[in-house]
Image (cartoon, rainbow, N blue to C red; front, top):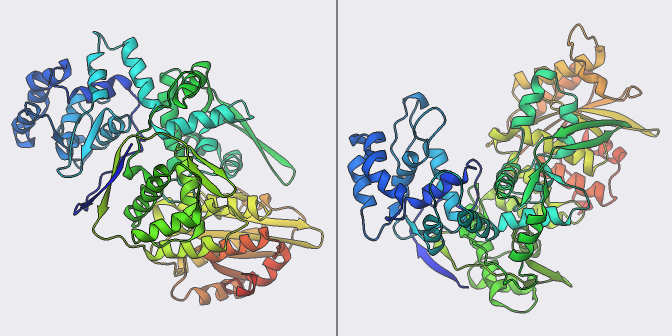
Length: 594
């Protein structure tokens, strides 16, 4: 195994390593066959499929010329093509698009085509050349295409090769390991997603299951189906997709799971359809992958791109984690974090202990076997050769710097909650920001509470009903890339929620969201949570307070995390939080606590 470093001027890096959409194994085999000039699919593409589906203006002749090339290397753009708006006017303009039949038409679009390329790459059937943005078939890919028999059913040899390929894919091993070690009978996609990938990062989000179950139980009937189908984080999607591949190969079994959670003495039970259990064949395959008994450990396919997926810092994060993996893999003894920090310094990456320790945990969470003993780490795996394409410039964003500062202060709170810093600046993930905020307050700060959201409801509520300290809080969370100025419309909305809670008239609002507060509470506050606040937000908070007679606060997500850390450390109580936070201004946690 060798991890090599190359310098590159490329600024258009591809998204490899993780796949969300395709699940048809026959179509995957067909995509691999594109790259084998002797395969039946390759011949059909040249003779009939591309002439039929691709117009001259969309590159028909160029595609055929490329497919006849020796050696057969195909550029990414030729494989995937481009999108059309509106979708109903789409034309076939990619080789993979033409290879796979779509639903209701003879070809697929550019996004699923991209995912099929990623899938073939993840499984080691094709390899990528950074110098010219092309792909070509591997030895394993040629074995797969030669194993094809007539008909659409996978041949025994194809299935064997596909199982070997999935056992070389680290996230699949991670899932099999989780399923094999659980004390429970099986795990939901949320159970798995919360332990898959680099936790606390925007590209690896997971819906907090307890908060989801409570939200689902309190949702209106018309919304429940959509919530069950669509509410999930990116890691939950990866978990669901990889588990579906494992299921098709007989290594796991899909089995719905009843999940029960509690709030203030009430129990909520819901069924999660996407839940999985390892099979006897899966246990046997996992033992084979891990080199048990007579088997040699299967080398895993790792690529630089799978080490981070989103954000302005992804090239930096990929590179840092790749160098950590390189150093660990090149040393046959236990390595300390301080040794890793010194090594990173030699490649001009200056990091702290918390960050490096979290990166190692992330490498374990994507399926790399790294052992820990006395705070030292040992690489105990086999990985195939891969390249670190070193970008010309590597810098951290201000957001990453903020996360590093907060990470260093979080010794009691799980670092998974650092994700809130990313979510607070991504308006496309408002719902997950709402739910993760409520999860932090209920699961880590021991408030009772509920994510509400939806029409004519606040984003959430929390309360405490201890005899010496009873109060409730109405919460509004807002994710904005450039900070939140609390516009008048949003202030008016909070004022309306406060008024509804005060009058509790179901003729005004039939959904009666206020009934989720404990009935003994008569002291209330309000809270706005965002990345940071700008403009005249303080005057809006003062206006709400003046009109409704209760106090509120603006809380930047970094200070909310530090507040939760102070609570977990025993420095704050619910009473302390109330006394420190609600003064009609922005809450900033005192430095004395750190």
